[in-house]
Every structure is written in C-alpha cells, then in structure tokens.
Length: 244
Image (cartoon, rainbow, N blue to C red):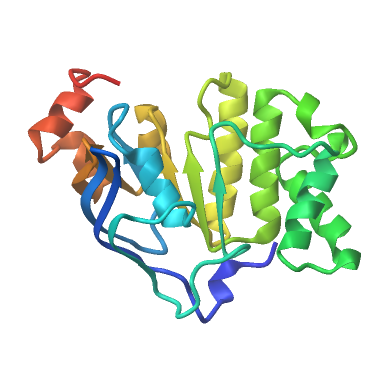
C-alpha cells in the first residue's frame, strides 16, 4: 500500500458547517459544525441515540444533510477509493475473501492484472492470507471485520470511517483489529471512529468528539477530555450516569 501522504490534492480537512439531519419530526443531527484534520485520530463517543453513526454516514456521503454543508478540502469530493467506511456488521459478498477485495479494487478502477497482487498484500497485512480462498460469509465475526479492513487497506484511502469496528468481538480479535487500524494510520490514513469502549478511545484517539442528543458538545484532545470534560453532559457520561 503506497503512502497516502504523497497526494497533493488532499481531501482534508473535512469541514461540517451547521449540519442537520431530520427524519420526520426527529432531529437526529442538530446544527453540527466540526472540522476533521488529517493527522489526528478522531474518536466519536456518546450515549446510544446521540447521532454518532449518522454523523459518520453523513461524512462518508451515504446520506445527505437536511441542512448545512459538508465540504472536503479538495475540489473533487471524496470518492470511491479516497475514503472508505467499515461498519459494525460488514457486508460480505458471496465469494472468497480474496475475491471480495478484488471486487472493491475493480470498482475503484484498478486493472485486472494488478488486483490479485494488491488483494493478497491487503490480506497479508491483516493476517488473513492463509484463508484467501475461503468463502467470506463463513468467516468468524472477527475475521470478517479484518477482511472489511483489508478491503479498505487495498484502496489506500486517505480517510477511513469506522463505526464500532470491534463491537461484540473477543479481546484477541479486538487486539488484531486495533493493530490494523494503527498500521493504516501510521501509513497516512485519517481515522475517524465511533466506539462505546472508553478504554479503546483512550488507546487509539488523539482527539475526542463527544455527542449528546445530536449535537457536538465537546471536541478536545483525548487526555483533556478524560481528565477535565468541559460540559456537565460529558462529565455525567464518563461517570456512567448517561444511558448507553
């Protein structure tokens, strides 16, 4: 995987201004203004229903805001291959682990002759090369999540959005997935991740975005957030008084 740092037309920062997302009478995202910089690992936390996953989907472009703007730095919007998203329950195609990655590369315009080699390199990076021929849908939950990360790895995205990538996984699988995410960040990929695991947020974050009822109440360095949260909602959240 070639470093993304050499790109001149960088996508970042990503700037959200007054973003709202409304479904019926429910305001899920409420006037969010936020800037995501290139070098920082951004961890998004908050209680259930705070709007964290919807915020990621808005940033990724899966849904459009009801109001406000979401702008990439590059004149060309973040497209396939330049940004990627890994979900809590990744979608696996009815084909082998290797073919799942090759398909993603084909969609990104990678030539047929290069796909297999790049796909195998990505599988090797996440420790799954030995099961390249195995059907993706029979893999364990942890293996499927690592395969989803391998699909993203193969595309060398500048930005990777992660929605609870280690939820419901055993400690060994969590360790492997965190290792892969750290490796992608070290290679220049911007990480923006939702997690309910506060220990993981401390380990993997440079900055914290704290959401409450669709609003961003805090955006601060990770150590500062955990040591001295500025809002009473964040303080109650860290003390376990806000519902998950």
